[in-house]
Amino acid sequence: MPKVLCIGDVMLDVVVKLQGTINYGEDTASKITTHGGGAAGNVASWIAHTGTESTIVARVGNDSAGAALISEFDDLKVDHSSLIKTNDPTGVVVVLVDQKGERTMFPETGANSGLSLADMPPLAGFDAAYVSGYALLNPRSRTGVMEMIASIKLAGIPLFYDTVTVGAMKEVDRELILSWLPLMDYILPNEEEAIYIVDATDINSALEKLLTLCPAVIIKRGSSGAIAQERGGQRIDIDAINTVVADTTGAGDSFAGGFIAAKISGSDLQASTVAGVTLAATCVANIGARPQGGHAL
Image: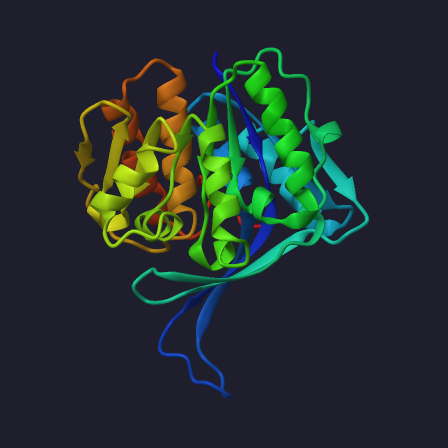
């Protein structure tokens, strides 16, 4: 069975589903639940949901939140033997979800900072590696993650990279982000991120520019589906699957999980993109960023 190494962040998501318009300075009715989160943790969970093996490389605190996240990984059958416990508090994200399902996030990275090469398990047996952009954007983890990437490339293991949000990327020099892309075999930005990274005016020019930096580009477009292209190949446009959206948190992570699992199992680019869109539709129909096989924490 294929096996994927997922490097990056694990968080506790506190999801606030608004029941109406925010009454600033007053009470606003809401439904509040807590779930496992963090891009790498989410991708590992969705990969495991497909039946493909996944291992998470991240850090949590030696606290009750960290213990709950580990318990959820057990439920989801994610290998967490490389999840390091530290004295820093587990990372937390407060996620505001409006009535249309759109989310706004307020993260505190906590224990996720400080990943090092020593955190990575032996690479024998892994068929692919996923790297969350948050791990490279974090200056305290960047050196260690770059060393992991160098080892993964030396081992000949394909690298899948998610650029993550524009808000997070704006904290780092754009030229530095551009320097990472040629190290990757596949990059998976969303439409806004793709346009921002290469300072493009539209998605078509963004795709063209990104393909000069990375051999395969998959652009997630939410309700408009996804675009995928390999350098020198034909552009593929896949429609989204119609569903009632409850919460868009984790949509991109579930897409990545579906895409990676399909790709390393032998699917072509089109079938892998369809797998990503299909899993994303499953994710957004529920509250939280993880498969429903887990539980609210």
